Length: 131
Image 1 (cartoon, one colour):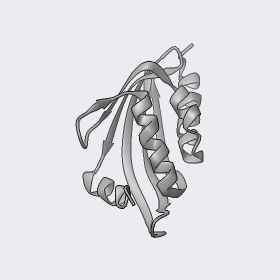
Image 2 (spheres, rainbow, N blue to C red):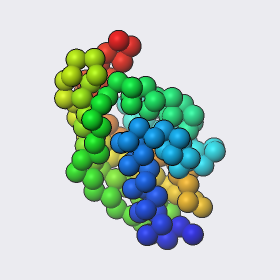
Image 3 (cartoon, rainbow, N blue to C red):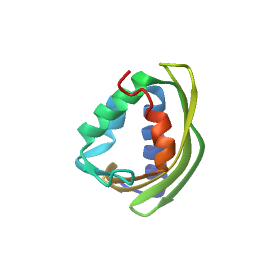
Image 4 (cartoon, rainbow, N blue to C red):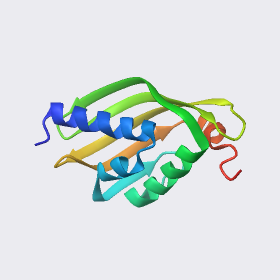
């Protein structure tokens, strides 16, 4: 069920969905009790909290692209490095967010996602989040 080809396809669908603004497909990629951890705040959040944050991001950042994807699959999960690029809707400024994501996968669903961002890039990406 969780062979390397299956995990690779699921990871690709997951990031393609976020890029396209398809939050329901992204949300459905997670197990119901998945844990999502962020290095910038060291919090563990739920898939629903993540869906809410990404809904806001989709509303604020246009022309989203997961560029320079480097996906490595291993038994039980994957690592992806990429640069999330887009344009802030508020001021049409191009933004980029280099990132590394490590995921555990069971039964075709992400059970744990650890994301690693540089906090300076996050601050610029989230600038005007409340605008």
